[in-house]
Image 1 (cartoon, rainbow, N blue to C red):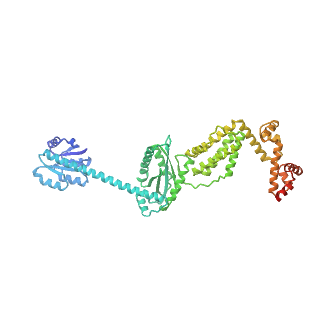
Image 2 (image 1 turned 180 degrees about the horizontal axis):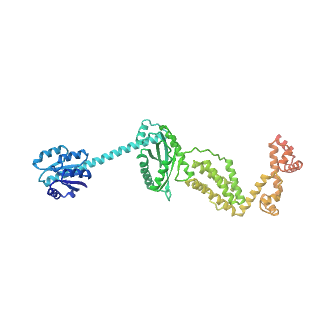
Image 3 (image 1 turned 60 degrees about the vertical axis):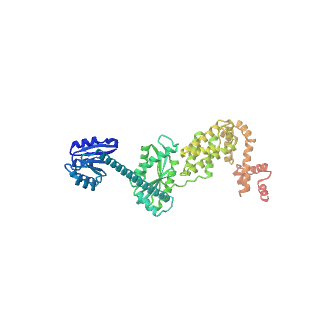
Length: 528
């Protein structure tokens, strides 16, 4: 609605004006009426008035004084004066100062309607012009901001823009003395999940954009832009910025119930070096996979913690030992230890964590299969396992996938008697291989298998096609042969090394096994 104010020192004139035209049908609202020039100025100052219809001569201030005051106040109020013939000189003066028109008393309805329509048209045109100018200004501001954001994007990628750098500093109020880049990534809706459709994500991004406008742009702390579903922010500061980003994170959670993680790069003093801050901010954010969601993570140099193939093999042997002993508690402890080592080794690199865990599981299952362990009932689709690992959005989730696989293997092995026998033999053979140089006996090894010697003797022969003494001798002789051919040790030294206190007894046993005395065997090998 267009707001209309009537002014005349004769109430009868005002009543007549109110009845002269159907004001509401013109989109006009009469917001008041006054009886003198002073009241008119007061009403104009206190109310938003679009049109004034006023007598040109009223007590207090004349119409010319009133219109001058309106112009001094820089108001866009339109004034239409009513005058008598004797006041014509006043009317001409008022027109010079910007009055729309003047009407001679008594006011003709048609003339008034014509002037009102002209005034309404003028007001609408001015409003349209103002709206268009505002839109143009906003568009120019948006384009300038977008250009600066493009410059900023290039700058953080290590491209020096020169003139563009000045625009960035001016548009984002980046004066230093320090500059820090931070990268913000949406985690999940509070008490929900992160499976959003495009519309939901855009709404969340729009809301975060508004918050960043308030706390960064409006407070002239720096700039930001959206890059690959992450908000990249650059701040100028003189003190620590961790508290600022912590407050920002809390504000986002409070207002829109969305968890976000923020990686903060190292501060730099040279504006052209913000690319280094950006790279370290991304590295910091990447650690959220290992640290958890809803984190503010300043960049820290990570010490490389090595994890070799030999280390993984040793951990695999530990897991196998737990299978052999049917020791679930030890299995839990060993699994926790290896997962902790993998986490330390791959910290900050999600793909390395996944590939290492996947490799560990693959090698373990292949080792079990080589031992003829029956794994029927376990879905061993490696592509499915890899896909499941990749789906996890945190290292804790990845660890649960690995644990679930290992525990299922443990259960399958424990529930199958044939597997139990195979694992017992693994345990026995492992013990013999590690202790063949000692004075081990059938009784000693039977106790390892938790069997009486008589039953164990039959059990051992069933699985090896040899009795215990023959098997032990074969192991000792194989090691003796290797030492003879690949070391400078003397015969008596080798005898002691493989579990014989008497070198003559050793030589006799060696001849029975290989058909030659030890030194003849060695010489024949050299000649060959």
